[in-house]
Amino acid sequence: MSSSDRRSFLLAPLALAACGFAPAYGPSGGAGALQGSIRAAEPRDKAAFDLVARLEERLGRAVAPRFDLTYTIRTQTARVGITPDNTIQRFQISGTVDWSLIDIASGARVDGGQVQNVAAWSATGSTIAGLSAEEDAARRLMVMLADQIVTRLIVSAGRRA
Image 1 (cartoon, helix red, strand yellow):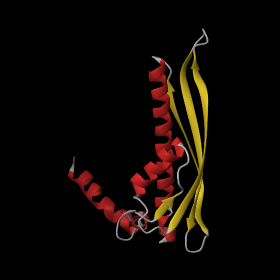
Image 2 (cartoon, helix red, strand yellow; image 1 turned 120 degrees about the vertical axis):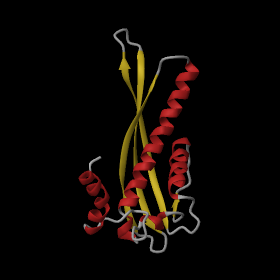
Image 3 (tube, one colour; image 1 turned 90 degrees about the horizontal axis):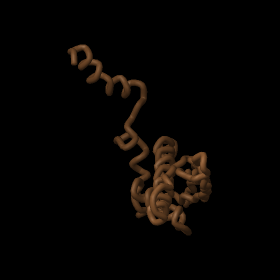
Image 4 (tube, helix red, strand yellow; image 1 turned 180 degrees about the vertical axis):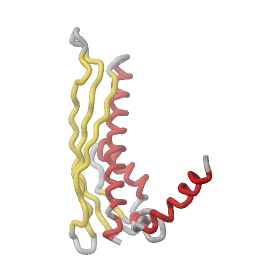
């Protein structure tokens, strides 16, 4: 690395700070306040359980909740890999979560939106392997959707701080 490249690399944080950039979990970022302050609605099925588990993994369990997170999960499975002899080789599960962040004190909706994603699995192998792959794809989908919700919460955290 040449010395001019090194200077540019070392000066980049200063340039970002000058334009108003602040790390989300830094002292002036609002995302630190999210930890332990969001209580997700009780899961009622496996998909919701996986979603809430990932939300709590990323945001911590609600110790002193300031916000309730409500959600509605919709999934749809499709056959996507069909051979010429009509054998299904791959499946795809698509999911959508409509979510709202509610301020517990006022009951007002302070944030929300919709996230969507897709996961797939192979249908080759035994029946048990196929069922296991389907379950894993559904879990991966909920993890991706929860991560998208957390990302949006982090991005908008400064407005709520």
